[in-house]
Length: 244
Image (cartoon, rainbow, N blue to C red; front, side, top):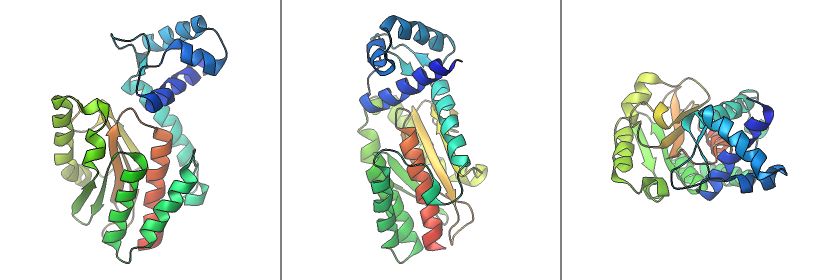
């Protein structure tokens, strides 16, 4: 893959997350200051590589799970190169204000379980996704309305697949114990509910309950990964600082 193809793929992912409609060559031509024909030629190559696809009702393209994985891997590399200090993690767009709001809500709680719940509720508000966290042997979940309000979940089979994933999230976390600081499971990569068309983004953190507690969000594969991944990681690090 060339650098330009990679940049076009990332632009498609970010535009699609923002607009929720397939991204066309005219939009990308404006971003890259080149002709639509040039963009279309690169899109054909990206589609052949399996990173984007063309919905039959649109001339635009949308990312595939493979395209999202390539993009997320590049974000994880950036996060992995940072120290375990929230101030050193990359911030995007209005995130600085969001992380301050997150810290304020967590710090206002005097008990660990309330702090974790406050962090989850904040992530729900800030990301528009469903939020979840482990509190001892329980899993706290909030934000069902956010998740099912997304256009991806207008079909019953997608809702059923999400329900299957959530029904099994507790035993799966206990069994697998994801070991990275930030873990992202995209679409069909999810352990259950593979047809749910969602991404699970979770961060490991230490708490009074366990050295392997988790906090994260569940949302459509179409989302702003760089913003959400950074917020989830900040939430885990802030909880460690405040409740340990």
